[in-house]
Length: 297
Image (cartoon, rainbow, N blue to C red; front, side):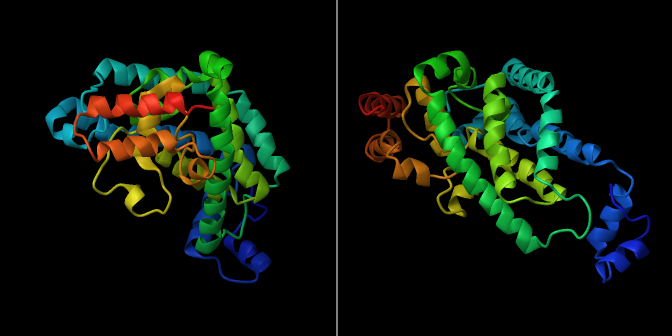
């Protein structure tokens, strides 16, 4: 809740004229308690999770022939019932974790996350988001490797790997314990480099959109991998899902540098090299899986 009742009070406190964005923020949030501002992130991510995967889902359901050339596993087709089951189950688990939002709100208070004025500059937001992506990617890499140990995979991570051919809605399809583990990685960046509450909203939405992208199951002509250095994209993560529990490749969720540094991209690189030589998709993936099994940790 902002300590200013009017724009004039805010301008006097800041010693300058409010920007358009700051004036809009003042009008919206002046009387809103901080805990409700924090919960906005839940509503935002729910809307994004519901709508962002929808275009590719409709493309696959309504025009499978048009979707096939862009699908990474063209023989795998999801029915409407599968899409709905994935969505409903993912939302159900998220709602069951509702009480944990109180803990998350407490975390933001501990981090002294500002909700008032001034708003951060675009440069500050961009720098913070870059830090958050790098920190989350590194921590998530090691959490993911932990989840592929036998006990953790059998008891927890196997739920997420039910989809050997992933789709956008599968980004949230996982065990409740995995959700809690991954939330640690998501909050690590803001804990190290505190940000404004609006930047936190943007971080959660951006990370979800990236997660939807890498689980989409599609390799599109305008994919982010063509524009962002070291971005793994859907192709890299799709291979990880195809191989499943025995996979020892492609643990990093967003970038490729951790897999390269720690040697956990060998199976995938072998698979890609084989792809360049032969045309049978099923033969290629079996060869890649065999290499993964032989070279596993």
